[in-house]
Structures are given as structure tokens and as C-alpha cells.
Length: 481
Ligand SMILES: NC(=O)C1=CN([C@@H]2O[C@H](COP(=O)(O)OP(=O)(O)OC[C@H]3O[C@@H](n4cnc5c(N)ncnc54)[C@H](O)[C@@H]3O)[C@@H](O)[C@H]2O)C=CC1
Ligand SMILES: O=C(O)/C=C/C=C(\O)C(=O)O
Image 1: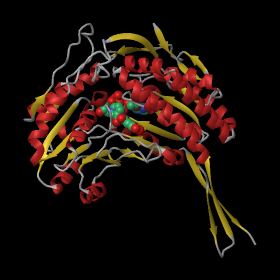
Image 2: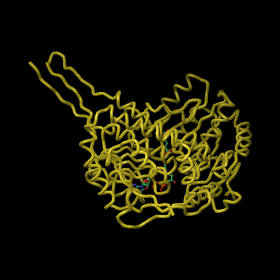
Image 3: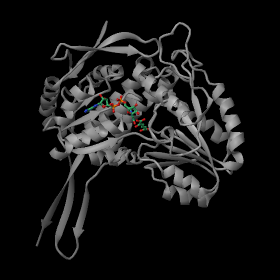
Image 4: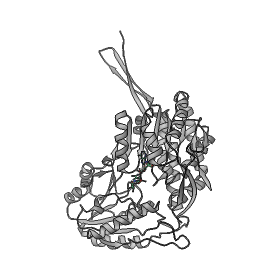
């Protein structure tokens, strides 16, 4: 059986413990590989390799760093099909999605930061009349930790690693133990691209063991984490006494506000995606849909018809719209919320049942599910489900829509459908979200700040924000006569 090995100091190696975890294929429920079950010793080894590589890498010219990052981007593109197949098998997502979204974005992450680092510069402030000149160095932090989740495996893993190494840091990174395969494959791509050994070290294993050891390591200077809010809270508690820099991209329960004056057809098509792309397992999915009363009944009917036409099936079939959920425990968690919805008095307008796919009877499939709710404070409207489940509810006024949109503990993204300019401006300012999309969804320009407010996280990634996170500003003040 295939072994998912650690990649430390430029070479693949077994975990120190000699222990392995089962890796499941969500499409058929079978174990198909073994994952290194690493512990604090593996993290310490990875740290040592990263520490040794740091003085050389941090003094490598920007041009050379950029050249290597661009080469990694090229190699990911060259290996697109193999990587996409690996992602679909490991995660259960449709191959088409991996081919058009996940792997192209992983390549773009390296290409973007390979270029961005050549434009990242220090600031200077001349204190006129005082004969002093200040300039601010932006120095790499040292060894940093990157911890990523299972929903967009290579996409989010590289979203952290690329800016970290572009800025001159060396990295100890851990992908999710639920989807480690493409991170494993990234090791050989980095070697082929000529990334010096020790610059990127990839350690596999569980959160409480390998992940915790990264966060606890006293000399790992910063942690960039994407995952659940509870885990983020735990990481913050562990890291705070060591004054580590933290970037936490956490959960979401994002509102999708639909006004009667919107471009209806575009809204309907995009709302299908923002509800169920990647089986709804994207922290940015619009899982709470609020529709202005005059078009509510029409929307309900049209939305149900669109969803009924989606195909749940084998991730490798070209016409599959929704593949498998990522794991059995996750499927059970999502199903438990459908039960809660019924207990709370919600109406299941569509879906709610597991799907049996011929030849893949033990896979983790679930119908896309639409729940009509009558109180925006109910649990299914407040708690992150992170699956193919959306709630819908009508509203009468802009004020009511805004109040409900903001009445959750999360604040990651919000989507607004309207052609009314004043309303766009008013609501964009008042929505409690780090990202507001108007008449679009998941429309990404990698230069923009990305992250959430409230329980959706701390800090911003993307563009120069990421490069600023992965560097320490040091001001030098010179007095001259
Ligand atoms: N992007 C997002 O917003 C994501 C949100 N979630 C939410 O979180 C829920 C739980 O999913 P999980 O897979 O359990 O996510 P998680 O937050 O536990 O996992 C994310 C990453 O953190 C690591 N991790 C876990 N515990 C850690 C610790 N103590 N120290 C350091 N690293 C640790 C994991 O190994 C994984 O690499 C989901 O049902 C979903 O609601 C999950 C994944 C992504
Ligand atoms: O950077 C993006 O485009 C998307 C990020 C998505 C997540 O962070 C997530 O789903 O967890």
C-alpha cells in the first residue's frame, strides 16, 4: 500500500514513531494509503532542517527565490492532471473541480508570490527639518509553521507556503491528515524545481500530535492556520504566551442577501455554486440565503429546480456536480444538522438524504439540501455545518436583512445581489465580514486582503498582507548632521 512519507531536509522519510494512519478514499470508503503518524520528534527534525536552511535561503537573492517559485508553479501546471486525480481521490471532490479550481490555484499561488516578492519593498520616512532618516526593513521571521485543512488541500497548503518562502522564511508545514496526498506530491515538485533542502519541510500526522508540536515549538516564530474555529481558538491559547505571530483563517456562516432588483438569472446560477461548490465545504460558501419577499416564492421554486438537476456521483465522472463528503465522521456531522433542523421545526425543501452511488456503495454521498427556516437564530442558521446544506428565509426590509446577516458569531464573507448602487454602498460598509462580494462570488484577485472578522479569524492573507505577515518590520532611524 502507498505510504505518505514526511519530506524533511529535501528527502522523504518515515515517521520517527514507525506509526501510520489509514488514509480513506471518500468515494468508496476504502483505505488506500498509509499516512506518517508524526510526533514532536519529527517536528523537531523538520525544525532543525529549516533552521539550518534559513541563513542561506534568507540571503538568497529575490530573483533566485522568484525563479524557483515560478518553476514550482510551472511544474504544478505540467502535472495538473495527476495532481487533480490525486486530489479528487483523496478528498472526494469532482475531478473537474480539481482540474479547474484547486490545482490551477495552487500553481497561481506560487506564480503570484514568485512575482509579488519582486515588487515588495521597504518604506522610508524622512523627518524633514530634524535631519533624520527612517527606513523600515522587512526581514524574514525565521522558521514558520503552516497548518492547512482538508477542504481545498493543495490550494490552501500552497496559499500559506508560497508567501512564507517567497519572503525568505523556511517552513515546517502540515497538511490535514484527512487529505495529505497532494502535499506529499509537492515535496518531489520542490526538489525538481531546485528548492534548496530544508526550505520546505512537510510533516504529516494528526492535529493533536504533529500540529500541536508545531504550535508548541518554542522557536517556530509564526503560525499560519486555516481550519475550524475551535481549533483556531486552541492554537491561539497555546501560542499566545510565546508571543508568536498568528494568522487564523477560521469558519464562516456567510449570508447571501438577494434583493428583488438583482440580475435574477446570474444570481440564480451563481447561488447554486456559492451553496454547493465542493459539496459546500468551502469556508466562503453562502450557507444562509436571505431573499427579499416579492421574489421569495419564485426563487424557492427556481432554486429547487436547479438543485434537483445536480448530479451527486462518482468524483471521476465528467458530469458529476457533487462528489463525496470528505470523511465518514464529517458526513455524520452534516447529517446530524439535518436532524437538528427538523427538530427545530425547519422544512426540508429539497434533499436531506444520503445517496447510494452504484459501484461506490460505501462512499460518503449526501443530497444537496435546502432547509427553509423561520427564525434566523435557530441552530442550523447559526452554526457552521460545512457541507451541502443551505438555509433560506425571506426578509422584508434592508434593515431586517442586514440585522440577520450580522446576527452570527462569524464574519468571513457576505454576498449581496442588487443593482441598487446606494444599497450596495450602504450594505458593503455595514456588513460584518472581511470579504463582501457584490453580484459575484469567490471572485478572487490574489492581491486583495483575505480573512475574516469576529470568530472567523485574525489577520489577513493574500498580496502584500501575506508578505507583511511573514516578515518582521524593523525601523532604522539615522540622525545626520
Ligand atoms: N477552512 C475552514 O474554514 C475549515 C473549517 N472546518 C470546520 O472545522 C470542523 C472540524 O474539521 P477538522 O477537520 O476537525 O478541522 P481542524 O480545524 O481540526 O483541522 C485543520 C487543520 O488543523 C490541524 N489541527 C487540528 N488540531 C490541531 C492542534 N491542536 N494544533 C495544531 N493543528 C491542529 C489539523 O490536523 C488540520 O491540519 C469542520 O466540520 C468545519 O466546520 C474544517 C476545515 C476547514
Ligand atoms: O483564498 C481563497 O480563495 C479561498 C480560501 C478558502 C478557504 O480559506 C477555506 O475554504 O477554508
